[in-house]
Length: 346
Ligand code: NAP
Ligand code: ZN
Image 1 (cartoon, rainbow, N blue to C red):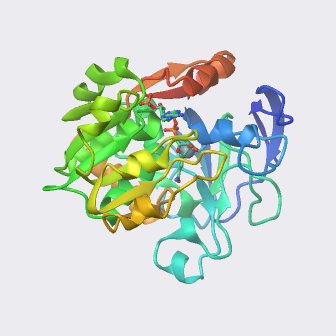
Image 2 (cartoon, helix red, strand yellow):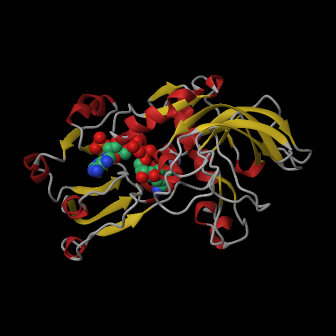
């Protein structure tokens, strides 16, 4: 086995703390990566707190991973020792179902193997990127062209692909009015992609103090959703809303902002079910949709797109000792716009 050290939650009520554990040996098609940076996703906090479902503990979160390849199995062709590689939210899938065959491993009908809080193909728990190393099948690694700013590339592995994928799927671009709901880790990437794809982008935010930063990200308009007059002014105006909100919110109000045939795409995952009146969809033949991360092929496409277009995440690099305080700031919406753990501080 390979010795690993990281930060783990031992139970849903304990804070993250140092923990030593073991990972599997590097198999024929495996790659071992020395992790340099790992982004902090709101999903990490949801999962260590059992917000969604009972988790597997001890839990080492982290699914926005970049680092250097230190070993490869004899059958590996995609990467070699010394290469920079990334790992996102999945480490394997059944590979044979209709969705896997189409490159939609995130919708694997058997259930993909997640990077943490999941079981691997061998039936043992997976541990994520808040740790010094990881062993992953080569097919679930990503290659990184942009080697200049690795800390800012890390969040692309989840926040990037989770917003890129739905915008591509629904063909959001020129001639569309896109509203990005919630300006956090996912939201700020949605603004960057929406602008890059040619859409007219409005940020819908509960935080008035984020307006200047939103415009600096490229957003054309900014609406403070706690101000009824500002909300009334944009009623019935958006083709798409990309909803990145992590907590309960008033879906009826947001759905009323869509044009006829508009689509509200959910990517944020509050712990409680949404309450939605049928009338809010019937009026204006609106659609309510959802989207989960993205497949490996599309994640690589997104990384290459970002490298070619100079897109990275806006980050604040943090030390491991500050992780709990950083979670508290994230819950308050006080992050511009992604915390990234520096593994040198472990
Ligand atoms: P984040 O950085 O905390 O951003 C969430 C943003 O939502 C906040 O910055 C805030 O923006 C807004 N917000 C928070 N509470 C709100 C409330 N009560 N009402 C309205 N807006 C509120 O989180 P993240 O890492 O971007 O993740 C966002 C959500 O997406 C999480 O639930 C996460 O688990 C989920 N997620 C889903 C997928 C997927 O595959 N679908 C992948 C990754 C993450 P303002 O200050 O601008 O209001
Ligand atoms: Zn995530």
